[in-house]
Amino acid sequence: MAAGFGSSSYYDRQFRQSPALIRARRPYIFKNALVGSVIATFALGVYAYTISVIGQDEFEDVKVPSASGQTEKK
Image (cartoon, rainbow, N blue to C red; front, side, top):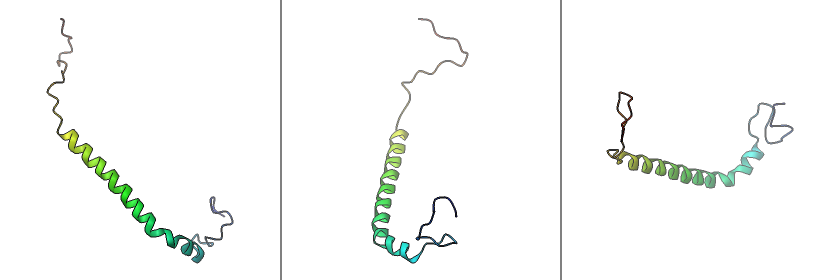
């Protein structure tokens, strides 16, 4: 038998879900899909907000060293 399944009665010999597993999961399918889509929407919103905020940054105040590699003396 494959690792992880052991002597589970929820899977048959071809590792397909048994009717008992399908019945046991049925009450949670809608709630799990709803929670998953809320989490995905939140993550995509945070990503989109971050990209939009970073796109507005201007780096004119950042000092860039000269290309010659020499340091400026003060």
